Length: 254
Ligand SMILES: [Zn+2]
Image (spheres, helix red, strand yellow):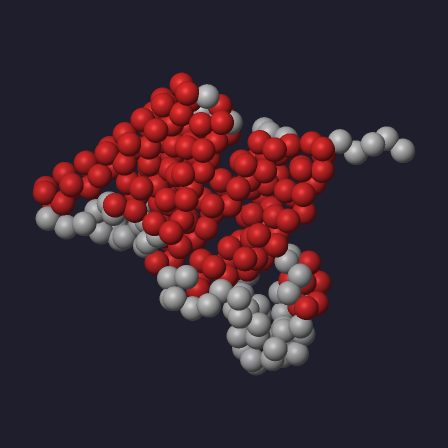
């Protein structure tokens, strides 16, 4: 039997743990803004309240096996959990088309962090420092491991990214007299700068804005009118922009 190399083990690990990570992220995204404990979540059916056993809680597989229905009351199980589990797996698979081995684990980690932030921002219009700060620090650490020049590009990127969006937020507040962008968005842009360097920032902003405009356009087509007042969190779009530039641009941190 051919020996299994380390790269394959890391790739396999990333794909195998992805649905479980997704399961945890799905719960964390709902519970953290509500300041509820993460560990005890998702233990009962939302319809009949029956306690769910271990075989009901296997990521993705349980939902598929039960065809999205509770085993006791046949009530529909929300597709939110399998959806996030699938997203976490998709992130790992997507990252594996570009990276392998250690860099794949790092890339998947970034993707999962961005997924968590996007979920919280979508549900609660909030990008907690608790997650943006460590994600920025992780980018700086990865850059530092590449050498001095990379670390400088990364640190400059983090500072410039924050300053850019904090400036836009300040300007918007002055002109429109209300909050448009939050400082959470500026901190997420600092995360982007830390991971792709100052050179990647314009592309992150461009890709994120195009994605946001596309969603606004689709929503307008559905409703039959353009609603500029409807609040739309920008974080998930910035996250998509960062993810694309990280995979296909020139990430400084890997
Ligand atoms: Zn039930």
